[in-house]
Length: 405
Image (cartoon, rainbow, N blue to C red):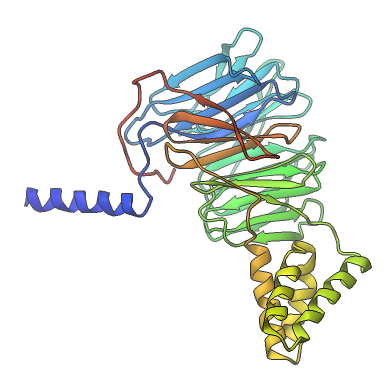
């Protein structure tokens, strides 16, 4: 019986490895964040809570890569975030405590208790006067950073873990991501949700971009959504994101990166189509009437290259055109737009990538993954700039399957 059980375990492990579901040695960098001035980069890593794998919270100086801060815990760290002025760093944990680090001394200033099973998400308000900490038990607490008391608590913000929280730049709206499949936008003056967006699986990461006009989130159901923050209208939905673990957008909203075992960078164009754009689209679609199939195929590529702004018209044509081939090509162009070829496709030799972050100027992309490795990339060229590691030499853990936490 023991032999049969051992064989089953071996076969299961092999199948996971063959399917790409097993992680290389060491904790995986799950979260990356640059300071607002771009001078510091923090990485938070963990692997498997049940196995009590060691994880790190690490800060490097940019662009030198000099190590400024390193802390390890047996269960690792889920998330970290700088205050806007860069004087403090908040770190989540898999205990009830969030940690606050003084970045002038790089010493832990204090633990903040009372977050249930885990303090999963952390975010400073833009003015630095409030720190939001989300709990694995579904609530969000707001700490007064002047005296470190809880100012208010948002009970039952989500059912289950609240993976991440992030503020808008005016501090009036908070976004949250939950295990319950919801991405929510909260009006902090009323404490009520302004918008709630439901996915089929958990929502892991969220961000704002383009002066907070855009709200972006990624779900383990394989979709990545870009919405207008005010109206909640979905501007773009990408269907091939995979079980995406992280998403980042340049501050101008021009580029989007997501981590789904590898990292991809795509151009993000969500501008409203004007008459000039629509005429360009119609001109390209004229190729669909040509007798030569090569011309028709090339026209389909040119239509798809126009991106997200073309979707509204293509949806209409796919429903209303009296010609079956035109309807088919319109649907095919929609699928191509929602699954765009990336400008950059990046990978780590060590294994999976599960976190991404753009520098404030958008010129550098940080990617984090297996074995506590972080890489910095030149966004314009796709060339690697630097490799950073959280691990001292010879301190790597054993292989374990990817956790769903």
